Length: 422
Image (cartoon, rainbow, N blue to C red; front, side):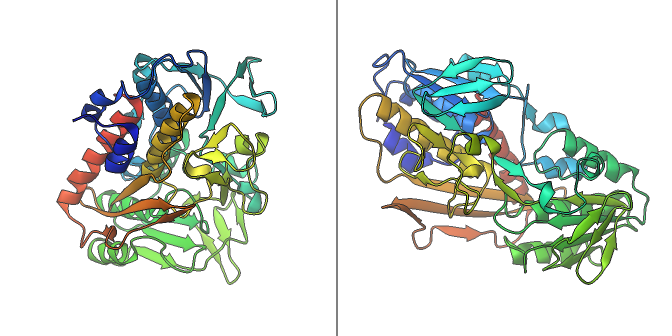
């Protein structure tokens, strides 16, 4: 039985395994427009997936990925590095698999986009013409919105919300912290990348303290009025494993920070840390503003969900965390949107109509200890211009378990393989 792109997106828009891909390479008409050029800015879950699937579904399309970094470093699973469970090497992967698929990789930084002429300009001076442009730069962090979080403060106060050097630095800060010290995390208001991520981080740091620094404490200052994802599961895990070690304070928006004294100033009090982790507010990546597709009112990008093409600028597609959508800003969703965008671009370049009713899935795991985890999952169907979750098509774990941990590690390996052709 052969599957076309529409069947594939409806059946397995989530973390598909590489074994599923063999029957898809002949779905399009290779060479129909051999000179068609697609430029993808960003090699994360969305960009790498989109580039790879365009080449799988129509090898005749020229696909170039422009990425600043040598390696892909996964945000999902990065909290386990802070917990001392994983190493940076465990979440770091190369781009050789994309090259094998026929994707051109360019290490450079995009500094300008001329949407009228369809040209991308890079820091090196190189320029790239495109028929279709895909922006998948993720999020732009906004420390300037927190007084005191200036360039000097950013040298010592980590956000570690883009996995990489800051993850490694924050881990070293935790290791150097005295037993009996205090780790303070400041959580931004929604929307932000990975809704359950801060609460998983709290769990992982507490797990590390329990093993190595049992007199230490975690203080969580949440700008939101409550835990925004998997509340009951996280609270049950904290009560079971870390009783008295975690202090959660909702509605605690920072007024300013003092990096020298590692203090968060709130309306009612000052909270001092031995290790301070401030996650600032976020918006769509800066390159979306350069392309004219970022909405000034909400700081995110409005798209046609059938194609992921911007509603503001033609021939520019936006995927991943930068889009304005009811779906979570997660690696799983970026992978999904990358496939929808890839399928749409192949159809458009070949003069066909994209699927008008894609179905996508999200699965988000969170570690609660070094061997247990929880998850939330949901399915969305596009009806008109709105994502709708069918009745019974969403849910969370009944409780944390070691089986969930096994599922989580399997999910990570599968989505990394699917995204990067590992």
